[in-house]
Image 1 (tube, rainbow, N blue to C red):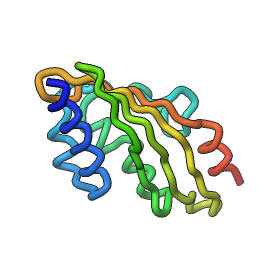
Image 2 (tube, one colour; image 1 turned 90 degrees about the vertical axis):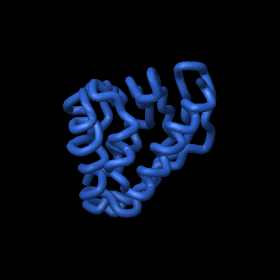
Image 3 (cartoon, rainbow, N blue to C red; image 1 turned 120 degrees about the vertical axis):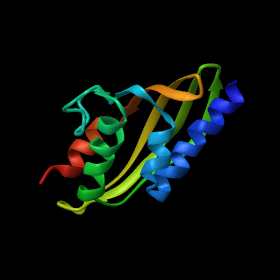
Image 4 (cartoon, rainbow, N blue to C red; image 1 turned 135 degrees about the vertical axis):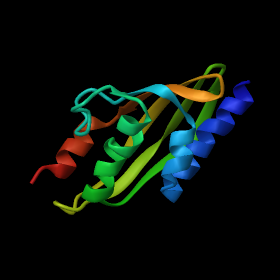
Length: 134
């Protein structure tokens, strides 16, 4: 099952880069728990429960308005059975300040029955905070 889990997570990143909302939502369990890094600028409603909160109303929709060229770049996907660990980098430019980020991230995905049941994100929250500061 773990190869299938890698394929599902890889597909989510690919759908995210295409801005394919239906494909992203389709990969999620209806009760998915989307955990964001403590103190991240978009963690004000942490954790997000369900695909509507996680994808449609979540950080990605806010980021698309506030950042230019924002990209989620997973560099390594690690198979951990019912979990997939993604290591990568966020890049982009804050529209309000013109400041760029190149922030490392770790995403820990938990899958069950072919769907994402949980995501926990860790990232360089200070870098994001500094980028939006005027």
